[in-house]
Every structure is written in C-alpha cells, then in structure tokens.
Amino acid sequence: MKTGYAAALAGAAMALPAFAGAAELNLICSADVVICEKLVTEFEAAHADIDVNMVRLSSGEAYAKVRAEARNPQTDLWWGGTGDPHLQAAADGLTMEYASPSLPQLHDWAVKQAEVSGNRTVGVYTGALGWGYNTDIFTKKGLKAPACWADLLAPELKGEIQIADPNSSGTAYTALATLVQLMGEDEAFDYLKKLNANIAQYTKSGSAPVKAAARGETGLGIVFMHDAVSQKVEGFPIAVVAPCEGTGYEVGSMSIIEGAQNPDAAKVFYEWVLTPEAQNLMPEAGSFQIASNKAAKTSAEVPDLSNIKLIDYDFAKYGSAEVRKALLSRWDAEIGGRAGE
Image (cartoon, rainbow, N blue to C red):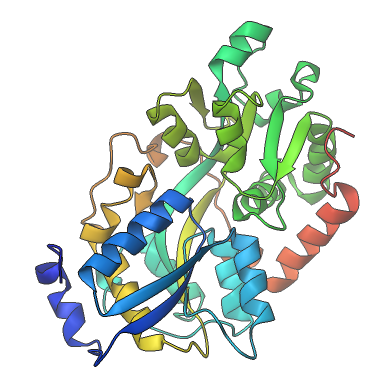
C-alpha cells in the first residue's frame, strides 16, 4: 500500500484474496463526481494491484444499467446513490449476498439496510432532503425565503425552482416518496402538479438543481441538504433549508453485482470504503453526508439530523420494485417532466 491505511485494513485484508497480477474493478459511482474520483484515486494508491474503471451514473441510471446487463454483468460494484434502487436491485436478484465483516463497526441505519436486503446492499452514508436557494437572487427579486414545502407553491416562484427527474435521480425519487409518505399519495400528486407550475427544469442529476442555483441560473434547487451545504462551503450564496412539515432522508448504499466478473476486487473495495479512513475522505471532496462507520469523523458542516424533523421513511416499501414502479409510472403520466405547465 502507498497510503496510511495498512493498520486499519489489516483485519479485513487477512480474509480477502491477494492478486498475482493487476486486477480490474468495474465500478458504478452514483455520488457527486468529485467524491467518486477522490475515492478511486485514493483506493488505487492504497491498492496498486487493482485498476478501477469508474463510470458516474445517477441512481436510476445505475439501476437501469445493472438490470439491462443482468445476463452478462459488466459492472462489479455499485457505490453510492440513494438506497431505494439498491433495494430494488436486491429484490430483483441483481446484487450479490455478502455479509461484510465490517458490519459491527457501522451505524444501525447502515446495518438495517443490509438486513432488509438480505445482505445484498449496505448503508455507506445518510443525509436529509431539503433545498438550497440563492440568497442574492431572492433578495434582488424580493422573494420570501421558503421554510416549508407549502411555501414552494407561491406564484412568485414560477420558473425559479429546479428538481431532478425521479426516473434518473435517486434524490428526486426520495422527494417523491417523501411527499407520498408525508401527505398521502393523491395529496402528494396534487401538490406535485401545483409545484410543476414553478419548475424551470427537471434535471437528470440529483445535485444539479442546487449547482444551478449556486451559479445564479435558477433560484432554488430541491436536493439533499448536504449537496446544498457543499455549494455554500465553496462560497456560493446558498441558504440551506429543512422543510418545516418534515422531510425524508437517504441511506446511500453499496452493492456487489450478482455474476460480477471481478468479485474479489469488488470485496476489497467494499471493505476499504467502509473504513473510517476512507469515509473521512468525503468532506475533503466537498461531500457532507453522515458516514456509516461509527468511528468516521463528522464535519461541522454536516447537517445535524437531530435538529431536522424527519419522517419515518419506509425504505423496504418504497425501495420495493412494485411500489417504485407504480410511483414512477404515475409521475410519468401526471407530471412527466413537463416543467412549468
């Protein structure tokens, strides 16, 4: 190894295979590209015998790719992105059962993700849903700062809001499932139809809306709060909001693909990325989630979940293939990405 991870990884390494020559790892990363690249760079520095081929895809895109390749998997490991599509992949038998020896080191919410999935996925980070808005734009246009979901329906916000498409984005699917659990399904879709009048664009990536707000291209982005925090930390005029009525949260997850061509390399990355040393890299790359390892450091910038009104998000139900498919089909039929209509 070329980094200081040797001591932390010694226990896990004893149970993992050694490679006679250079091995490959085909990785899908569903987090922000900066953290994806940071993890790959540090992992390859620590494991010179494994070359990582990484592609960055949103959660929905990643699930679609894994499913399309089920008969001939081209991916070994899928890291990051919301847990719902990981759970759907697990239910579909697309991911491999693997009970990590690191599970006792993880927070209960991360372990529960493994238990619910039959050890076909595991939690790697968590964070609450909310939004970030550009304070300069709001001040210039005399707009009232929104504190609640209901405030986003204000007529003066027409064309000022971006959110991702829930078909491609785990963030947006979490928002959809959150509103259904918060309001009831019919009421949630009524809300989304009204909100649609204020939507300027449905993006492909979940973090794109707040990046657009940071650049002054839109007023507000509905995103995970840590994505808004990262823009604020970079110096953009972004205010971060947790909705007053309550909100959902994600359990970003990780899964090894069933039938992976390089399962041994996948397990090496799996164990490495669950260490506190690896998880402590995330704030360095501008990612401010709560990491799953109990010993990982929590940045002062990370939103404190104890101060946020969280719903009792039902990951098993809303990560199931049946419920997920039904909600997305209804969204396509009634909203369908027709921004501003």
